[in-house]
Image (cartoon, rainbow, N blue to C red; front, top):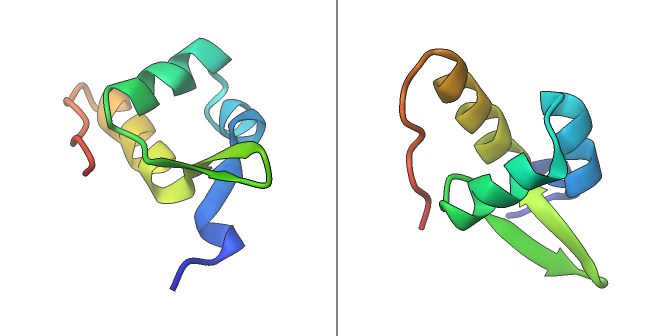
Length: 66
């Protein structure tokens, strides 16, 4: 079951990771972070964002999502 706590807006992801919009879009393009559209907004999966940030901070390559 998917809840709203599982997803966040791109704006929220930018604030959490202290990165820019380009970085979040790049992570989505590279399939590190899943996205969905809801009510005309793009949402990204919270756990993917946090795991990607952690992997990059640790000097590892993030895992591609399907």
